[in-house]
Length: 333
Image (cartoon, rainbow, N blue to C red; front, side, top):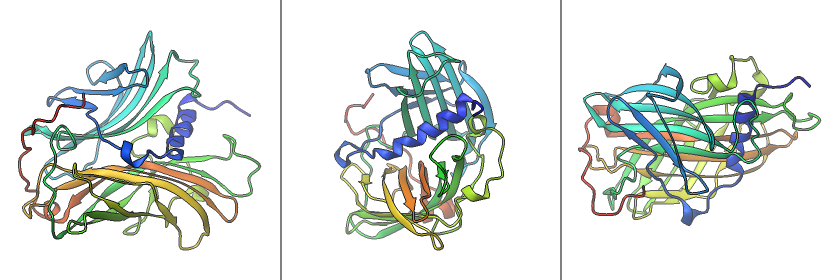
């Protein structure tokens, strides 16, 4: 078998994070970015307790225009590579920000840390991998004012990595695995009286496979119709909205109108914004979803990514409250 580029292998292993969903009580969002309008600093706390960090002044290997649904925002996509004595950091960040107010920003991304390893001899067996959603309105020491009655709908984008192993293939090796990036629309409904939120990715519009953010890792666009994500639906069962505005559910149901899904296991979760729209509902919800699945013809696969949903009123008028000041809780970093 001909050798594959190390970056393609990275993508295959990255999706394995979805196999071990976090326990509900352990779910939390943490600050992983700092942005002053010019420089983005991106960081994670490793299993050893050390902090690995990259920034847009020194560690960028690719920068591309980005797309964002946020009213009044600009967007840019960064790919980072940092080689140091302790190991190698490889990460991607999609930055969405308000040019008139840099404190109003969001970052979506992922990170792979190769502790004690350096190119070209990177082994992924012991790498640490993270999926990240961050911004000052998401859990930076401020508890959102979630309503106690009424409902709100949220609509937005979801995406990430999609791995697909066609049924009937003789084992899961690099030659028969289809690895793509998926994108789709997420719909969420929050019932604040019941204190729950539920939703779906792909029930409105179609999931599609498209090289939007990870092209530098996955290589050129390939024609792989057998690996298309079209018509799959990721149903997000009701999750309880906690007092801190977070929600999580260790269950996710995958459906397809023409294929028989025999098994699907996953989780989803996220947080509401601490900024309100003109209806006094959180202006957005953001988080993660992951699911592995099997089908009746022995097909296997997984979807692993993040999502951003904007409230109906915020989508209509683009108006929201300013970011409130901290309420005295200690920062998580």
